[in-house]
Image (cartoon, rainbow, N blue to C red; front, side, top):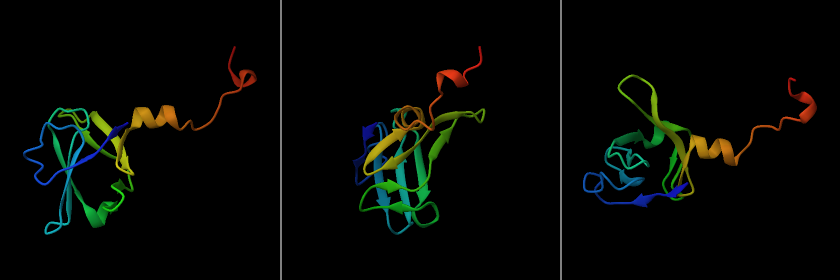
Length: 103
């Protein structure tokens, strides 16, 4: 997890991992990839469900590589970027009991 950084101009913060800018005239939230690669994403605030006050996105968002594979995927919750890999480890979906395992 990493803290999101609210900025006034996403272009000036392009290489700041996890930067966020709100543009109310375009109903958009711009964000930089939390990995620091410099990729900028744009979300429609109303369509995706973004709570500006708590810096929370109500769905998983991501960036795809040119070949269609996932470069980064996760969510923004209460101002923290949570990578899907981190979330999977932090929020287990169930436990495997020893007797349930195949021999």
